[in-house]
Image (cartoon, rainbow, N blue to C red):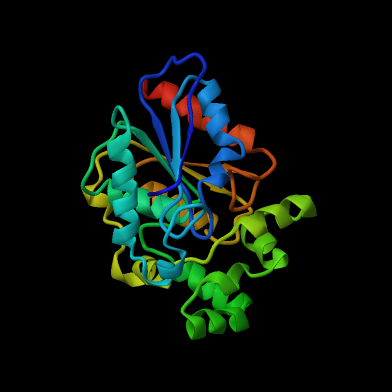
Length: 261
């Protein structure tokens, strides 16, 4: 059974639940640090699963070959447990899964944070090859994405700003898991998003100092979904970086604008 972190509001004012999907190497814990409580205090019931092989969910021994469709089954399984169709929120690889999920399911709204763009991770992969050729060679030799985050220094480079306290980077680094090589291939070429199939209203957010997905890639994501992006002066892990409150407040304000009750 998948790990599922749930935070219920003490004073429920919203009927629509929020479903948070984490990105590569992460787990439900990344949402529970700040966002689940923030939105529960705003009246929403909040839910964050750890995908198979992540966090406290089973399947770590098989994660190398977990496909995007396997992860999508985890998303669908969690969504089916909720009392009403949720607003779905995805970070990074989780944003890719949100896009794929919405190709066949319509929901009240969706939010992408520092998401894989519809054209996939080819740009990210080329940047990693240039910046970390040795680590990328290890990725392909081991059929594992863990070499890209296998030290606290690499974790900081990939996810956090230079001013993130070392003790926090170390704590988050110790929570990271390996990531699926198969899903990397899906995001690279084999199973790219198809924006033309998506009808759900979308908010697209990005970090101006993100080393994984550039400003231009976030802008391309927003364009694909016929909306405008909104940027924050932060790195990739927008839900953990200093200034996360501004991200959460923007999301809450957008949900109010969309009439999400």
